[in-house]
Image 1 (cartoon, rainbow, N blue to C red):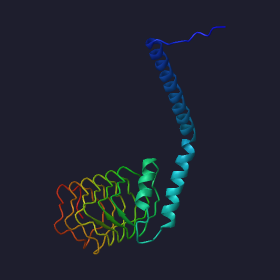
Image 2: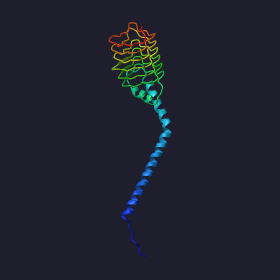
Image 3: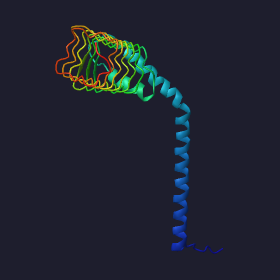
Image 4: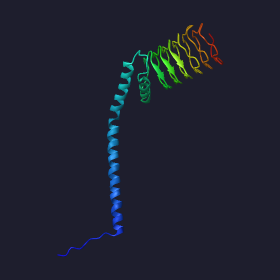
Length: 208
C-alpha cells in the first residue's frame, strides 16, 4: 500500500495557527473568569478578616506612644467605610492619616500626636482630644466638634474654618496659636484663658 505524503498549504497553516490562538485565548479568558468568580465569592470573608485584623491591631497598641501600624489600620478600615464611633487611640502617633467625612463621635484621642492629618467634614461630636497635639497643618474644616473636649490640646496652625464647636470645652492649656477659625460656630463654648494668639477669628457665629 502506498502512503501519500500530506502537505499543508500556507493558507491551511495560517488557519490552524489562528484557531489554535483563538482557542487558547478562550481557555485563558475562561480561567480568568473562574478565578474572578472565586475571588468575588470569597470577598466578604477576606474583607471581614481584614477589618478584624485592623481592629485587633488598634486594640493591641492602645496607649502606646508609637504609631505601631495604627495609621495603616485606620486607613484600611476607612476603605471599608467602617464607623469609627467610640474609637480609642490614646497616646498614639498618627501621621498623614485622612479621616475626612468619617464618624468619630464619642472617640478618644487623648494625648495623640497628629501631623499632616485630615478630618474635614468628620463627626467628632463629644470626642476627647485633651492633651492632643495637632501639627503641620491638620485640617478640621467644616467638622462637627460639638461638645468636644480640648483641654490642654495644641491646635497651632490648624484649620477649623466652618467647624461647629458648639459646647466645646477648653482651658488655659489649650492653644489655637496661628490657627484659622473663620466662620466657626462657638456657641456655648468655654474658651476662657485659651491661647488665641495670631488666630484668625473672622465671621464667628458667636462670641464667648
